[in-house]
Length: 58
Image (cartoon, rainbow, N blue to C red; front, top):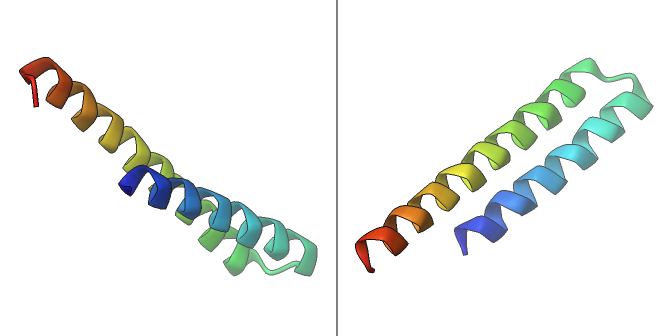
């Protein structure tokens, strides 16, 4: 479930970044980019946790 949330953050961030570009709003653009990065980091963390769980047999 957390992976889905991570993807949603990435998509929402991309939309915000694109809207910021279209409106010329640098703050919105940066906010969107940050949200994308946070989503990607969350996704990578979840993948690593899944790999650890598989290796230890849980």
